[in-house]
Structures are given as C-alpha cells and as structure tokens.
Length: 376
Ligand SMILES: *Cc1c(COP(=O)(O)O)cnc(C)c1O
Image (tube, rainbow, N blue to C red; front, side, top):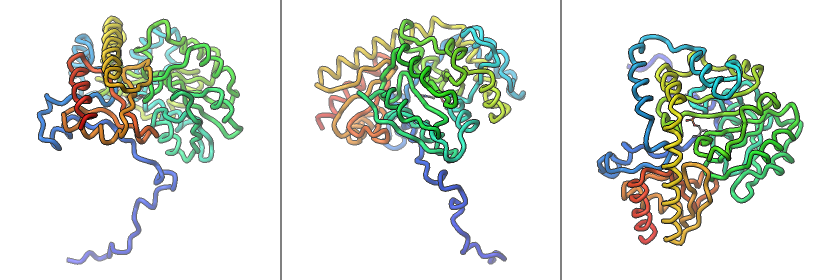
C-alpha cells in the first residue's frame, strides 16, 4: 500500500509562497449569525448582528424584485463590461462610462489599484486605525505599507502628506473612516489631494458616503476631472443593503480605469449584483430613509452610552466606536447574550468595540445586553 514516492520529506508547501504573502495577517470578519447560533445553542432569529456595518433594512423592495427577475438568466455569463450599470453610474456622477470601473465589492477596486500600480518595494501610505484592507492589499503585492499615526482617531492629513517620499505610489484615505467613523471636510480633503505629487495615486474610499448628510458629501467624482491621480471608491454593500452580492465601483481618470480593467477578472461582477445595483440607483428615496433611520438610531446609541457613562467617537457613518475597558471581554459577554458586535483590537483599539447602528429593536437589545455585559 506504500506510495511509490514517500511524502515524508516534502517541505511545507506554504514555504513556496513569497515572504510577503506569508507575513499577511488574516482579515477578521464579523462573526456570522449561524456560527454564534451553533456555538451557544441559540436560535438564529434571536441573534442580533451589529458587526459588519450592513444596512439592517436590507435592500429595497424594488431591488429585491430586480434580483428575482435577473435569476431568469442564471445560465448566462454576466455582462463583463457592465454596460448598463456603468452608464447609470456615469449619468449619476456626470462622468463617462470609461471613467467607471466595477468591482466585486469595492474591496475589489482597492485590490485592483494595488495590483495595477504597486510593485514590490513601492510604498503605500494609510492612517492608523483605518480600514484593514489597505495593509492587506499593499502586502499582497510585496509593497511596503507606511502607517501614519492618527490624530483624534482620524486621518492626520499633514502627517500623511509628510510621509510621502519618492517611493510612494499610493495613498489611501477613508472618508468617513472605518472603524472610527471620523470624517474630513471636503475643503481639507481637496487641499490634500491637490498637494500630492503627480506620481502618487490617491484612493478616496467613500464606502459610507450615503450616510453623510448631503451637504457634507464631497464633490469627489467631479474632482476626478481635475486630479488624474484620484480614484474614488464606492460600494453597494453598506447603505444600499447589498453586501451579500458584492458590488462596488471606482470613479477615476479613464487611463487609470484602463489599467484596472486589464488586471481584473473578465466577469468580476455577477449578473444579480449588476441588476440589483442598477435598481438601487433608481431608488434614491430608500437610501434617504436609511440615512434618516441611521441618524435616529445613532442618537439612541449615543444616549445609551451617555447613560452608561461611556466614551464614544462622534461618528459620520452607520456605526459607533465605544470605549468599554476590556473590549475582548465585553465582546464575549455580548456574544453570550446573542449580540454580535466587532472587537477592534486588531485595529490597535483593544479597549473599544465597534457597533453598527441597527433597527430600533436591535439597538435596544444591544444597549440592554451592554448594560449586563459591563456589570458582569
Ligand atoms: C465595508 C468597507 C469597504 C468595502 O466593502 P465592499 O463590501 O467590498 O464594497 C471598503 N472600505 C471601507 C472603509 C469599508 O468599511
């Protein structure tokens, strides 16, 4: 029964990967509801998940109908050029379709930028306590991440500008930022983009843009005409309630877009996602309602934190970062009560938890559970 070739002396195949791949720390997602249900013997319907900044309302009825209709064509490949969705986005943002790149989530856009523009040894600059994917996507290319100290938990743009050297190819800015919820006003942001050398690309990640009050939104898509090195990234995963379908997009100079299109998969955005995204863009009223519900829910959470004597970071998004002492311990105490939030020790914030704003009943459940968690 012995195999003709002994396997005993084979090296660990993971050693075949480049050092810079082996050094990548895994992305830690929010705990799935089913997993908690299994671990604690809870019913899935009794679990409240406020861990991944999803829209608790899900997509609008019109979007659900568009997804169902799109299932008629499941045997067909999707439109690899996403013509309809790009045209809809181009009209909406007053750009041309060749200035739009679609992604399998906006995470794909972040990856594609690093894939197209970073070589081993290049530098990418981002802030401490900023979105975890920036270092991951940077390291996957063998490039060097330059993490700049935060200021009041947000981006310190002058310090980020000062950290740019001839090796820098890319700078990431999240606005609002995840996990801190901090926000940079449009004037300061544009001044930063304008200050960048021509050979540094700026990725402006606006995943939570729809949760800003309209007056706070930067005219970032219009900036692309002025700044050929600017890439604006948006997603349907958050306010549009479509995280499961994975669809996002970037708006950028057509020459930059062309580079991203060369490295992307030919069919990187699935057909259900494309149909859903087109329908979501036609349903602006639903997003306005979601923003309102979020604003009210955020105020309820803040009031609860105030009553508990807790400190939180004022947020411009659909989540709040709250200081609870031992974040890991309070996270566990909440899990035991069927409430999933996000520990952020991996973001250098071990005393804090990030909680997504839920529906009114979910917010109440969370605050009650938090009260218990802090006492025990
Ligand atoms: C959630 C998130 C994204 C990416 O989400 P996708 O689902 O991949 O579109 C990007 N940036 C930030 C800051 C986020 O929080």
